[in-house]
Length: 192
Length: 213
Length: 192
Image (cartoon, rainbow over all chains, first blue to last red; front, side):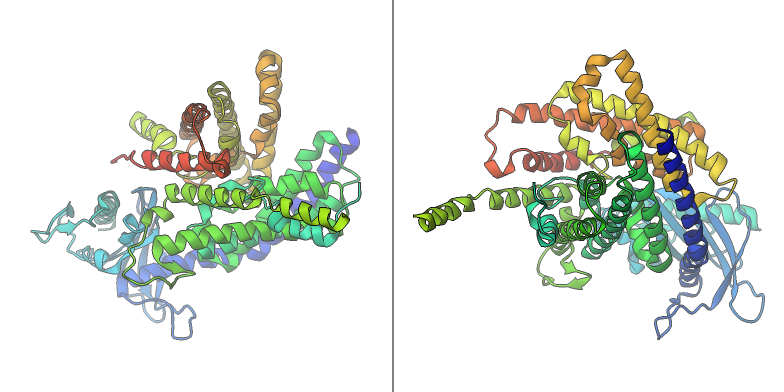
Protein backbone atom coordinates (compact mmCIF):
# COMPACT_ATOMS: atom_id res chain seq x y z
CA UNK A 1 0.00 0.00 0.00
CA UNK A 2 2.80 2.35 0.90
CA UNK A 3 4.51 1.60 -2.37
CA UNK A 4 1.29 2.53 -4.14
CA UNK A 5 1.05 5.91 -2.48
CA UNK A 6 4.69 6.50 -3.32
CA UNK A 7 3.92 5.75 -6.95
CA UNK A 8 0.94 8.10 -7.05
CA UNK A 9 2.94 10.92 -5.50
CA UNK A 10 5.87 10.48 -7.88
CA UNK A 11 3.57 10.33 -10.89
CA UNK A 12 1.69 13.42 -9.70
CA UNK A 13 4.94 15.30 -9.43
CA UNK A 14 6.16 14.25 -12.86
CA UNK A 15 2.86 15.14 -14.49
CA UNK A 16 2.56 18.44 -12.64
CA UNK A 17 5.99 19.46 -13.87
CA UNK A 18 5.20 18.33 -17.41
CA UNK A 19 2.01 20.37 -17.37
CA UNK A 20 3.88 23.37 -16.04
CA UNK A 21 6.06 23.18 -19.15
CA UNK A 22 3.05 22.86 -21.43
CA UNK A 23 1.42 25.79 -19.69
CA UNK A 24 4.51 27.94 -20.09
CA UNK A 25 4.85 26.97 -23.71
CA UNK A 26 1.30 27.80 -24.68
CA UNK A 27 0.31 30.58 -22.29
CA UNK A 28 1.46 33.40 -24.49
CA UNK A 29 -0.22 32.11 -27.62
CA UNK A 30 -3.46 31.51 -25.78
CA UNK A 31 -3.46 34.99 -24.27
CA UNK A 32 -2.76 36.41 -27.73
CA UNK A 33 -5.62 34.43 -29.22
CA UNK A 34 -8.05 35.77 -26.66
CA UNK A 35 -6.82 39.30 -27.04
CA UNK A 36 -6.97 39.13 -30.82
CA UNK A 37 -10.51 37.83 -30.74
CA UNK A 38 -11.75 40.84 -28.78
CA UNK A 39 -9.58 43.18 -30.81
CA UNK A 40 -10.95 41.90 -34.11
CA UNK A 41 -14.53 42.28 -32.90
CA UNK A 42 -13.81 45.76 -31.55
CA UNK A 43 -12.38 46.80 -34.90
CA UNK A 44 -15.49 45.50 -36.62
CA UNK A 45 -17.74 47.35 -34.18
CA UNK A 46 -15.92 50.68 -34.28
CA UNK A 47 -14.48 50.90 -37.80
CA UNK A 48 -16.63 48.34 -39.56
CA UNK A 49 -13.52 46.71 -40.99
CA UNK A 50 -12.51 43.08 -40.54
CA UNK A 51 -9.09 42.41 -39.07
CA UNK A 52 -7.98 39.85 -41.60
CA UNK A 53 -5.72 41.09 -44.36
CA UNK A 54 -5.49 39.80 -47.91
CA UNK A 55 -2.91 37.19 -46.93
CA UNK A 56 -5.14 35.74 -44.21
CA UNK A 57 -3.06 37.14 -41.40
CA UNK A 58 -4.47 39.32 -38.66
CA UNK A 59 -3.86 43.00 -39.23
CA UNK A 60 -5.13 45.46 -36.71
CA UNK A 61 -5.87 49.10 -37.28
CA UNK A 62 -6.70 49.65 -33.67
CA UNK A 63 -5.33 49.17 -30.18
CA UNK A 64 -7.32 48.52 -27.05
CA UNK A 65 -6.69 50.32 -23.79
CA UNK A 66 -8.63 49.02 -20.77
CA UNK A 67 -10.91 51.48 -19.01
CA UNK A 68 -12.79 50.92 -15.79
CA UNK A 69 -16.50 50.30 -15.91
CA UNK A 70 -18.21 48.48 -13.06
CA UNK A 71 -20.23 45.31 -13.61
CA UNK A 72 -19.26 44.67 -17.18
CA UNK A 73 -17.11 41.88 -18.54
CA UNK A 74 -14.56 44.26 -20.06
CA UNK A 75 -14.31 47.80 -21.39
CA UNK A 76 -11.75 49.46 -23.65
CA UNK A 77 -10.90 52.79 -25.18
CA UNK A 78 -10.12 52.23 -28.84
CA UNK A 79 -7.15 54.05 -30.32
CA UNK A 80 -5.34 53.81 -33.68
CA UNK A 81 -2.80 51.01 -33.90
CA UNK A 82 -0.12 53.34 -35.13
CA UNK A 83 0.34 56.98 -34.44
CA UNK A 84 -1.71 59.06 -32.09
CA UNK A 85 -3.81 58.73 -29.02
CA UNK A 86 -7.04 59.80 -30.68
CA UNK A 87 -10.08 58.08 -29.23
CA UNK A 88 -11.74 56.24 -32.07
CA UNK A 89 -14.47 54.98 -29.78
CA UNK A 90 -15.20 52.68 -26.88
CA UNK A 91 -15.82 48.94 -26.79
CA UNK A 92 -17.83 47.42 -23.95
CA UNK A 93 -18.17 43.68 -23.46
CA UNK A 94 -21.25 42.56 -21.53
CA UNK A 95 -22.48 39.16 -20.49
CA UNK A 96 -26.01 37.91 -20.24
CA UNK A 97 -28.34 35.02 -20.99
CA UNK A 98 -30.40 34.38 -24.08
CA UNK A 99 -30.98 30.72 -24.68
CA UNK A 100 -27.56 30.12 -23.12
CA UNK A 101 -24.66 32.32 -22.04
CA UNK A 102 -24.30 35.34 -24.31
CA UNK A 103 -21.32 37.65 -24.57
CA UNK A 104 -21.55 40.71 -26.81
CA UNK A 105 -19.33 43.66 -27.62
CA UNK A 106 -20.94 47.07 -28.08
CA UNK A 107 -19.04 49.72 -30.01
CA UNK A 108 -19.68 53.34 -29.05
CA UNK A 109 -18.64 56.57 -30.73
CA UNK A 110 -15.97 58.70 -29.00
CA UNK A 111 -18.60 61.08 -27.65
CA UNK A 112 -20.74 58.11 -26.51
CA UNK A 113 -23.69 59.53 -28.44
CA UNK A 114 -23.98 56.72 -30.92
CA UNK A 115 -23.76 52.96 -31.04
CA UNK A 116 -21.39 52.18 -33.88
CA UNK A 117 -21.83 48.42 -33.93
CA UNK A 118 -22.69 45.27 -32.03
CA UNK A 119 -20.61 42.12 -32.32
CA UNK A 120 -21.20 38.69 -30.81
CA UNK A 121 -18.27 37.38 -28.79
CA UNK A 122 -19.80 34.14 -27.55
CA UNK A 123 -23.20 32.66 -28.14
CA UNK A 124 -24.89 29.30 -27.97
CA UNK A 125 -28.34 30.18 -29.19
CA UNK A 126 -30.60 27.81 -31.09
CA UNK A 127 -29.00 27.04 -34.43
CA UNK A 128 -30.98 28.36 -37.37
CA UNK A 129 -33.14 30.55 -35.17
CA UNK A 130 -31.49 32.34 -32.26
CA UNK A 131 -28.09 32.01 -33.86
CA UNK A 132 -29.29 34.44 -36.52
CA UNK A 133 -28.26 37.18 -34.12
CA UNK A 134 -24.97 36.59 -35.90
CA UNK A 135 -26.42 38.09 -39.08
CA UNK A 136 -24.68 41.37 -39.84
CA UNK A 137 -27.89 42.82 -41.27
CA UNK A 138 -29.88 42.29 -38.09
CA UNK A 139 -27.20 43.74 -35.84
CA UNK A 140 -26.85 46.81 -38.06
CA UNK A 141 -30.19 47.89 -36.63
CA UNK A 142 -28.48 48.73 -33.37
CA UNK A 143 -26.44 51.54 -34.87
CA UNK A 144 -28.58 54.21 -33.34
CA UNK A 145 -28.12 57.21 -31.05
CA UNK A 146 -27.77 56.46 -27.36
CA UNK A 147 -30.14 59.14 -26.10
CA UNK A 148 -32.80 56.57 -25.25
CA UNK A 149 -32.74 52.84 -24.42
CA UNK A 150 -33.70 50.71 -27.41
CA UNK A 151 -36.99 48.87 -27.45
CA UNK A 152 -37.57 45.50 -29.09
CA UNK A 153 -40.70 45.16 -31.20
CA UNK A 154 -42.08 42.18 -33.04
CA UNK A 155 -43.47 43.84 -36.11
CA UNK A 156 -42.13 46.82 -37.98
CA UNK A 157 -40.11 49.42 -36.10
CA UNK A 158 -42.17 52.59 -35.82
CA UNK A 159 -39.81 54.90 -34.00
CA UNK A 160 -36.06 55.48 -34.36
CA UNK A 161 -35.44 53.83 -30.98
CA UNK A 162 -37.14 50.56 -31.84
CA UNK A 163 -35.42 47.39 -33.00
CA UNK A 164 -37.17 44.61 -34.89
CA UNK A 165 -36.94 41.15 -33.36
CA UNK A 166 -35.85 38.13 -35.38
CA UNK A 167 -38.86 35.98 -36.26
CA UNK A 168 -38.79 32.82 -34.20
CA UNK A 169 -35.96 34.12 -32.03
CA UNK A 170 -37.58 36.55 -29.64
CA UNK A 171 -35.63 35.35 -26.62
CA UNK A 172 -32.26 35.79 -28.30
CA UNK A 173 -33.26 39.14 -29.83
CA UNK A 174 -34.51 40.34 -26.47
CA UNK A 175 -31.32 39.25 -24.74
CA UNK A 176 -29.13 41.14 -27.20
CA UNK A 177 -31.27 44.27 -26.91
CA UNK A 178 -31.15 44.25 -23.10
CA UNK A 179 -27.41 43.76 -23.16
CA UNK A 180 -26.90 46.61 -25.61
CA UNK A 181 -28.98 48.89 -23.40
CA UNK A 182 -27.03 47.76 -20.36
CA UNK A 183 -23.70 48.47 -22.04
CA UNK A 184 -24.71 51.94 -23.22
CA UNK A 185 -26.27 52.87 -19.87
CA UNK A 186 -23.19 51.86 -17.92
CA UNK A 187 -20.80 53.51 -20.36
CA UNK A 188 -22.79 56.76 -20.29
CA UNK A 189 -22.96 56.73 -16.51
CA UNK A 190 -19.33 55.93 -15.82
CA UNK A 191 -17.29 57.24 -18.70
CA UNK A 192 -18.59 60.77 -18.97
CA UNK B 1 -6.31 -18.12 -24.28
CA UNK B 2 -4.31 -16.70 -27.16
CA UNK B 3 -4.33 -13.02 -27.82
CA UNK B 4 -5.78 -11.78 -31.10
CA UNK B 5 -3.31 -10.63 -33.72
CA UNK B 6 -2.35 -6.97 -33.77
CA UNK B 7 -4.36 -6.52 -36.92
CA UNK B 8 -7.43 -7.96 -35.25
CA UNK B 9 -6.82 -5.76 -32.22
CA UNK B 10 -6.88 -2.77 -34.53
CA UNK B 11 -10.03 -3.59 -36.46
CA UNK B 12 -11.79 -4.54 -33.27
CA UNK B 13 -12.26 -0.91 -32.38
CA UNK B 14 -13.47 0.01 -35.84
CA UNK B 15 -16.45 -2.28 -36.12
CA UNK B 16 -16.75 -5.42 -34.00
CA UNK B 17 -16.51 -3.56 -30.73
CA UNK B 18 -16.98 -0.01 -31.92
CA UNK B 19 -17.13 1.96 -28.69
CA UNK B 20 -20.12 4.13 -29.49
CA UNK B 21 -22.21 2.01 -31.82
CA UNK B 22 -21.68 -1.40 -30.24
CA UNK B 23 -20.28 -1.04 -26.74
CA UNK B 24 -22.43 2.03 -26.13
CA UNK B 25 -19.87 4.00 -24.18
CA UNK B 26 -18.52 7.50 -24.73
CA UNK B 27 -21.95 8.83 -25.61
CA UNK B 28 -21.76 12.26 -24.02
CA UNK B 29 -19.44 13.88 -26.56
CA UNK B 30 -21.07 11.90 -29.36
CA UNK B 31 -24.35 13.64 -28.77
CA UNK B 32 -22.94 17.04 -27.94
CA UNK B 33 -20.32 17.61 -30.58
CA UNK B 34 -21.75 16.03 -33.68
CA UNK B 35 -23.74 18.99 -34.92
CA UNK B 36 -20.97 19.73 -37.36
CA UNK B 37 -18.45 17.50 -39.09
CA UNK B 38 -15.52 19.78 -38.30
CA UNK B 39 -16.31 19.58 -34.59
CA UNK B 40 -16.73 15.82 -34.80
CA UNK B 41 -13.36 15.30 -36.48
CA UNK B 42 -11.51 17.56 -34.03
CA UNK B 43 -13.07 15.88 -31.02
CA UNK B 44 -12.30 12.49 -32.50
CA UNK B 45 -8.69 13.48 -33.06
CA UNK B 46 -8.29 14.90 -29.55
CA UNK B 47 -9.83 11.82 -27.95
CA UNK B 48 -7.68 9.50 -30.05
CA UNK B 49 -4.58 11.39 -28.98
CA UNK B 50 -5.48 11.06 -25.29
CA UNK B 51 -6.48 7.43 -25.74
CA UNK B 52 -3.23 6.44 -27.41
CA UNK B 53 -1.01 8.32 -24.96
CA UNK B 54 -2.79 7.09 -21.85
CA UNK B 55 -2.94 3.51 -23.17
CA UNK B 56 0.80 3.48 -23.76
CA UNK B 57 1.74 5.08 -20.43
CA UNK B 58 -0.60 2.84 -18.46
CA UNK B 59 0.76 -0.16 -20.28
CA UNK B 60 4.31 0.82 -19.38
CA UNK B 61 3.27 1.12 -15.73
CA UNK B 62 1.08 -1.97 -15.65
CA UNK B 63 3.37 -4.03 -13.47
CA UNK B 64 3.27 -1.39 -10.74
CA UNK B 65 -0.49 -1.02 -10.59
CA UNK B 66 -2.49 -2.64 -7.87
CA UNK B 67 -6.26 -2.81 -7.32
CA UNK B 68 -6.73 -0.07 -4.77
CA UNK B 69 -5.20 2.99 -6.31
CA UNK B 70 -5.48 1.84 -9.89
CA UNK B 71 -8.41 4.09 -10.77
CA UNK B 72 -6.65 7.07 -9.25
CA UNK B 73 -3.56 6.49 -11.36
CA UNK B 74 -5.67 6.12 -14.51
CA UNK B 75 -7.45 9.40 -13.80
CA UNK B 76 -4.17 11.18 -13.13
CA UNK B 77 -2.66 10.04 -16.41
CA UNK B 78 -5.76 10.73 -18.48
CA UNK B 79 -6.28 14.16 -16.91
CA UNK B 80 -2.70 15.10 -17.73
CA UNK B 81 -3.01 14.24 -21.41
CA UNK B 82 -6.37 15.94 -21.67
CA UNK B 83 -4.86 19.11 -20.20
CA UNK B 84 -2.16 18.95 -22.85
CA UNK B 85 -4.72 18.45 -25.62
CA UNK B 86 -6.88 21.27 -24.29
CA UNK B 87 -4.03 23.76 -24.09
CA UNK B 88 -2.79 22.75 -27.55
CA UNK B 89 -6.25 23.38 -29.00
CA UNK B 90 -6.54 26.74 -27.29
CA UNK B 91 -3.17 27.77 -28.61
CA UNK B 92 -3.38 26.52 -32.20
CA UNK B 93 -7.05 26.02 -33.04
CA UNK B 94 -8.59 28.73 -30.89
CA UNK B 95 -11.95 28.99 -32.64
CA UNK B 96 -12.39 25.22 -32.64
CA UNK B 97 -11.54 25.14 -28.94
CA UNK B 98 -14.31 27.67 -28.33
CA UNK B 99 -16.78 25.66 -30.40
CA UNK B 100 -15.98 22.47 -28.52
CA UNK B 101 -16.16 24.33 -25.21
CA UNK B 102 -16.35 22.29 -22.03
CA UNK B 103 -16.41 19.00 -23.93
CA UNK B 104 -12.65 18.87 -24.30
CA UNK B 105 -11.93 18.55 -20.57
CA UNK B 106 -14.82 16.11 -20.43
CA UNK B 107 -12.66 13.70 -22.43
CA UNK B 108 -11.23 12.85 -19.01
CA UNK B 109 -14.41 11.08 -18.04
CA UNK B 110 -15.00 9.59 -21.45
CA UNK B 111 -15.75 5.99 -20.52
CA UNK B 112 -13.95 4.73 -23.62
CA UNK B 113 -10.53 5.73 -22.31
CA UNK B 114 -11.11 4.19 -18.90
CA UNK B 115 -12.60 1.05 -20.39
CA UNK B 116 -9.61 0.52 -22.70
CA UNK B 117 -7.22 1.25 -19.85
CA UNK B 118 -8.86 -1.41 -17.74
CA UNK B 119 -9.51 -4.01 -20.44
CA UNK B 120 -6.40 -3.65 -22.56
CA UNK B 121 -3.64 -1.33 -21.40
CA UNK B 122 -3.39 -2.70 -17.88
CA UNK B 123 -2.91 -6.19 -19.22
CA UNK B 124 -0.96 -5.83 -22.44
CA UNK B 125 2.32 -4.56 -23.71
CA UNK B 126 2.79 -1.05 -25.05
CA UNK B 127 2.66 -2.01 -28.72
CA UNK B 128 -0.67 -3.79 -28.41
CA UNK B 129 -2.00 -0.97 -26.25
CA UNK B 130 -0.92 1.53 -28.86
CA UNK B 131 -2.66 -0.40 -31.64
CA UNK B 132 -5.78 -0.77 -29.52
CA UNK B 133 -5.76 2.96 -28.85
CA UNK B 134 -5.52 3.73 -32.55
CA UNK B 135 -8.29 1.30 -33.45
CA UNK B 136 -10.69 2.44 -30.78
CA UNK B 137 -9.88 6.07 -31.44
CA UNK B 138 -10.55 5.69 -35.14
CA UNK B 139 -13.72 3.74 -34.44
CA UNK B 140 -14.90 6.52 -32.18
CA UNK B 141 -14.02 9.17 -34.77
CA UNK B 142 -15.80 7.10 -37.42
CA UNK B 143 -18.99 6.99 -35.33
CA UNK B 144 -18.76 10.71 -34.58
CA UNK B 145 -18.26 11.51 -38.26
CA UNK B 146 -21.26 9.48 -39.41
CA UNK B 147 -23.47 11.30 -36.95
CA UNK B 148 -21.83 14.60 -37.82
CA UNK B 149 -22.45 14.17 -41.52
CA UNK B 150 -26.10 13.23 -41.02
CA UNK B 151 -26.78 16.06 -38.61
CA UNK B 152 -24.91 18.80 -40.44
CA UNK B 153 -26.22 17.76 -43.86
CA UNK B 154 -29.85 17.57 -42.85
CA UNK B 155 -29.69 20.41 -40.36
CA UNK B 156 -27.71 23.00 -42.31
CA UNK B 157 -27.40 21.65 -45.85
CA UNK B 158 -23.60 21.67 -45.47
CA UNK B 159 -20.76 19.28 -44.80
CA UNK B 160 -17.58 20.87 -43.45
CA UNK B 161 -19.26 24.22 -44.22
CA UNK B 162 -19.46 23.44 -47.95
CA UNK B 163 -23.04 23.54 -49.10
CA UNK B 164 -23.99 20.14 -50.48
CA UNK B 165 -27.76 20.14 -50.61
CA UNK B 166 -29.52 22.65 -52.86
CA UNK B 167 -31.19 25.78 -51.53
CA UNK B 168 -34.55 24.23 -52.28
CA UNK B 169 -34.01 21.78 -49.43
CA UNK B 170 -35.47 23.22 -46.23
CA UNK B 171 -33.07 22.29 -43.45
CA UNK B 172 -34.35 20.10 -40.62
CA UNK B 173 -33.19 22.41 -37.86
CA UNK B 174 -34.07 19.84 -35.25
CA UNK B 175 -31.06 17.88 -36.38
CA UNK B 176 -28.69 20.38 -34.83
CA UNK B 177 -30.72 20.63 -31.66
CA UNK B 178 -30.40 18.21 -28.73
CA UNK B 179 -33.46 16.24 -29.84
CA UNK B 180 -31.89 15.61 -33.20
CA UNK B 181 -28.78 14.29 -31.53
CA UNK B 182 -30.71 11.67 -29.55
CA UNK B 183 -32.81 10.89 -32.59
CA UNK B 184 -29.88 10.34 -34.94
CA UNK B 185 -27.89 8.28 -32.49
CA UNK B 186 -30.92 6.14 -31.66
CA UNK B 187 -31.62 5.44 -35.31
CA UNK B 188 -27.97 4.76 -36.17
CA UNK B 189 -27.61 2.34 -33.25
CA UNK B 190 -30.80 0.65 -34.33
CA UNK B 191 -29.38 0.30 -37.82
CA UNK B 192 -26.04 -1.04 -36.60
CA UNK B 193 -27.74 -3.53 -34.28
CA UNK B 194 -29.89 -4.73 -37.14
CA UNK B 195 -26.85 -5.10 -39.42
CA UNK B 196 -25.00 -7.11 -36.81
CA UNK B 197 -27.84 -9.45 -35.93
CA UNK B 198 -28.90 -10.25 -39.47
CA UNK B 199 -27.50 -13.78 -38.99
CA UNK B 200 -24.64 -13.80 -41.50
CA UNK B 201 -23.31 -16.61 -39.27
CA UNK B 202 -25.86 -18.98 -40.76
CA UNK B 203 -24.40 -18.74 -44.23
CA UNK B 204 -20.90 -19.23 -42.82
CA UNK B 205 -22.00 -22.23 -40.82
CA UNK B 206 -23.59 -23.75 -43.91
CA UNK B 207 -20.39 -23.24 -45.88
CA UNK B 208 -18.35 -24.90 -43.11
CA UNK B 209 -20.71 -27.86 -43.04
CA UNK B 210 -20.49 -28.20 -46.81
CA UNK B 211 -16.70 -28.03 -46.69
CA UNK B 212 -16.55 -30.67 -43.99
CA UNK B 213 -18.88 -33.02 -45.81
CA UNK C 1 -29.86 37.89 -4.05
CA UNK C 2 -32.57 35.29 -3.41
CA UNK C 3 -34.12 35.93 -6.80
CA UNK C 4 -30.78 35.27 -8.41
CA UNK C 5 -30.34 32.06 -6.46
CA UNK C 6 -33.78 30.82 -7.44
CA UNK C 7 -32.92 31.69 -11.02
CA UNK C 8 -29.68 29.71 -10.85
CA UNK C 9 -31.45 26.74 -9.28
CA UNK C 10 -34.29 26.57 -11.78
CA UNK C 11 -32.01 27.15 -14.73
CA UNK C 12 -29.64 24.39 -13.68
CA UNK C 13 -32.40 21.91 -12.87
CA UNK C 14 -34.88 22.41 -15.67
CA UNK C 15 -34.14 25.01 -18.30
CA UNK C 16 -30.56 23.99 -18.87
CA UNK C 17 -31.12 20.41 -17.78
CA UNK C 18 -27.79 18.62 -17.76
CA UNK C 19 -29.06 15.58 -19.59
CA UNK C 20 -31.35 17.09 -22.17
CA UNK C 21 -29.40 20.20 -23.02
CA UNK C 22 -25.76 19.51 -22.31
CA UNK C 23 -25.75 15.73 -22.80
CA UNK C 24 -24.02 15.09 -19.52
CA UNK C 25 -24.52 11.91 -17.56
CA UNK C 26 -25.74 9.90 -20.53
CA UNK C 27 -24.00 6.64 -19.59
CA UNK C 28 -25.80 6.22 -16.27
CA UNK C 29 -28.87 7.75 -17.85
CA UNK C 30 -29.01 4.84 -20.29
CA UNK C 31 -27.71 2.27 -17.85
CA UNK C 32 -29.53 2.86 -14.61
CA UNK C 33 -32.86 4.13 -15.81
CA UNK C 34 -34.60 0.77 -16.01
CA UNK C 35 -36.38 0.94 -12.69
CA UNK C 36 -37.75 3.96 -10.93
CA UNK C 37 -36.45 3.09 -7.46
CA UNK C 38 -32.89 2.64 -8.70
CA UNK C 39 -33.16 5.79 -10.76
CA UNK C 40 -34.26 7.85 -7.77
CA UNK C 41 -31.47 6.39 -5.66
CA UNK C 42 -28.89 7.12 -8.32
CA UNK C 43 -30.31 10.61 -8.76
CA UNK C 44 -29.85 11.43 -5.11
CA UNK C 45 -26.40 9.87 -4.96
CA UNK C 46 -25.32 11.98 -7.93
CA UNK C 47 -26.84 15.13 -6.41
CA UNK C 48 -24.94 14.50 -3.21
CA UNK C 49 -21.62 13.86 -4.95
CA UNK C 50 -22.18 16.82 -7.25
CA UNK C 51 -22.76 19.16 -4.33
CA UNK C 52 -19.74 17.92 -2.39
CA UNK C 53 -17.53 17.95 -5.49
CA UNK C 54 -18.82 21.32 -6.66
CA UNK C 55 -18.10 23.00 -3.36
CA UNK C 56 -14.72 21.31 -2.85
CA UNK C 57 -13.48 22.05 -6.36
CA UNK C 58 -14.61 25.66 -5.99
CA UNK C 59 -12.68 25.97 -2.75
CA UNK C 60 -9.55 24.38 -4.17
CA UNK C 61 -9.63 26.32 -7.43
CA UNK C 62 -10.73 29.75 -6.28
CA UNK C 63 -8.93 29.79 -2.97
CA UNK C 64 -5.81 27.83 -3.73
CA UNK C 65 -4.91 27.21 -7.35
CA UNK C 66 -5.56 30.71 -8.62
CA UNK C 67 -3.76 32.23 -5.66
CA UNK C 68 -0.58 30.30 -6.40
CA UNK C 69 -0.83 30.45 -10.17
CA UNK C 70 -1.24 26.73 -10.76
CA UNK C 71 -4.42 26.92 -12.83
CA UNK C 72 -3.07 24.34 -15.26
CA UNK C 73 -3.52 21.72 -12.55
CA UNK C 74 -7.25 22.32 -12.67
CA UNK C 75 -8.31 19.13 -14.44
CA UNK C 76 -6.06 16.87 -12.40
CA UNK C 77 -7.17 18.28 -9.06
CA UNK C 78 -10.82 18.32 -10.06
CA UNK C 79 -10.90 14.68 -11.07
CA UNK C 80 -8.97 13.60 -7.98
CA UNK C 81 -11.40 15.51 -5.76
CA UNK C 82 -14.34 13.90 -7.54
CA UNK C 83 -12.81 10.44 -7.14
CA UNK C 84 -12.30 11.18 -3.46
CA UNK C 85 -15.85 12.45 -3.03
CA UNK C 86 -17.26 9.31 -4.64
CA UNK C 87 -15.09 7.19 -2.37
CA UNK C 88 -16.49 9.05 0.67
CA UNK C 89 -20.08 8.65 -0.50
CA UNK C 90 -19.45 4.97 -1.16
CA UNK C 91 -18.17 4.40 2.37
CA UNK C 92 -21.07 6.37 3.82
CA UNK C 93 -23.73 4.42 1.90
CA UNK C 94 -22.02 1.13 2.64
CA UNK C 95 -22.15 1.87 6.36
CA UNK C 96 -25.63 3.33 6.69
CA UNK C 97 -27.58 1.88 3.76
CA UNK C 98 -26.02 -1.55 3.11
CA UNK C 99 -28.92 -2.89 1.05
CA UNK C 100 -28.81 0.14 -1.24
CA UNK C 101 -25.07 -0.36 -1.56
CA UNK C 102 -25.65 -3.94 -2.72
CA UNK C 103 -28.23 -3.03 -5.34
CA UNK C 104 -26.07 -0.28 -6.80
CA UNK C 105 -23.19 -2.62 -7.44
CA UNK C 106 -20.71 -1.27 -9.95
CA UNK C 107 -22.73 1.87 -10.63
CA UNK C 108 -21.65 3.64 -7.49
CA UNK C 109 -17.91 3.86 -8.21
CA UNK C 110 -18.87 4.66 -11.78
CA UNK C 111 -20.28 7.96 -10.63
CA UNK C 112 -16.67 9.17 -10.81
CA UNK C 113 -16.84 8.96 -14.57
CA UNK C 114 -20.23 10.61 -14.74
CA UNK C 115 -19.52 13.56 -17.00
CA UNK C 116 -22.26 15.48 -15.24
CA UNK C 117 -20.16 15.86 -12.13
CA UNK C 118 -16.99 17.08 -13.80
CA UNK C 119 -19.21 19.13 -16.09
CA UNK C 120 -20.86 20.84 -13.15
CA UNK C 121 -17.49 21.67 -11.57
CA UNK C 122 -16.28 23.18 -14.86
CA UNK C 123 -19.47 25.17 -15.42
CA UNK C 124 -19.12 26.68 -11.97
CA UNK C 125 -15.74 28.02 -13.03
CA UNK C 126 -17.01 29.20 -16.40
CA UNK C 127 -19.90 31.13 -14.87
CA UNK C 128 -17.60 32.46 -12.15
CA UNK C 129 -19.97 31.69 -9.31
CA UNK C 130 -19.34 32.58 -5.67
CA UNK C 131 -19.68 30.07 -2.85
CA UNK C 132 -23.43 30.23 -2.27
CA UNK C 133 -24.16 30.27 -5.99
CA UNK C 134 -21.95 27.20 -6.40
CA UNK C 135 -23.92 25.39 -3.71
CA UNK C 136 -27.28 26.24 -5.25
CA UNK C 137 -26.11 25.44 -8.76
CA UNK C 138 -24.72 22.01 -7.79
CA UNK C 139 -27.88 21.00 -5.96
CA UNK C 140 -30.03 22.25 -8.83
CA UNK C 141 -28.01 20.45 -11.48
CA UNK C 142 -28.02 17.23 -9.49
CA UNK C 143 -31.75 17.33 -8.94
CA UNK C 144 -32.27 18.10 -12.61
CA UNK C 145 -30.30 14.98 -13.47
CA UNK C 146 -32.35 13.02 -10.93
CA UNK C 147 -35.52 14.32 -12.53
CA UNK C 148 -34.39 13.33 -16.03
CA UNK C 149 -33.32 9.86 -15.02
CA UNK C 150 -36.51 9.22 -13.04
CA UNK C 151 -38.80 10.31 -15.85
CA UNK C 152 -36.85 8.05 -18.19
CA UNK C 153 -37.12 5.13 -15.77
CA UNK C 154 -40.86 5.60 -15.51
CA UNK C 155 -41.21 5.54 -19.27
CA UNK C 156 -38.92 2.54 -19.66
CA UNK C 157 -40.91 0.55 -17.13
CA UNK C 158 -43.90 1.08 -19.39
CA UNK C 159 -41.89 0.30 -22.50
CA UNK C 160 -41.10 -3.13 -21.07
CA UNK C 161 -44.65 -4.10 -21.99
CA UNK C 162 -44.52 -2.60 -25.46
CA UNK C 163 -43.61 -4.38 -28.65
CA UNK C 164 -40.36 -2.68 -29.60
CA UNK C 165 -38.76 -3.73 -32.92
CA UNK C 166 -35.77 -5.95 -32.27
CA UNK C 167 -32.90 -3.73 -33.39
CA UNK C 168 -34.20 -0.91 -31.23
CA UNK C 169 -34.61 -2.77 -27.98
CA UNK C 170 -32.58 -1.29 -25.18
CA UNK C 171 -30.45 1.72 -26.11
CA UNK C 172 -32.15 2.43 -29.43
CA UNK C 173 -35.61 3.05 -28.08
CA UNK C 174 -34.22 4.78 -24.98
CA UNK C 175 -32.45 7.33 -27.14
CA UNK C 176 -35.52 7.93 -29.27
CA UNK C 177 -37.54 8.49 -26.10
CA UNK C 178 -34.86 10.87 -24.90
CA UNK C 179 -35.24 12.78 -28.16
CA UNK C 180 -38.88 13.46 -27.38
CA UNK C 181 -38.10 14.36 -23.78
CA UNK C 182 -35.41 16.76 -24.99
CA UNK C 183 -37.99 18.45 -27.18
CA UNK C 184 -40.31 18.75 -24.21
CA UNK C 185 -37.62 20.22 -21.99
CA UNK C 186 -36.59 22.75 -24.60
CA UNK C 187 -39.99 24.32 -24.04
CA UNK C 188 -38.90 25.58 -20.64
CA UNK C 189 -37.74 29.14 -20.93
CA UNK C 190 -37.06 31.97 -18.56
CA UNK C 191 -37.24 35.65 -19.28
CA UNK C 192 -34.81 37.47 -17.10
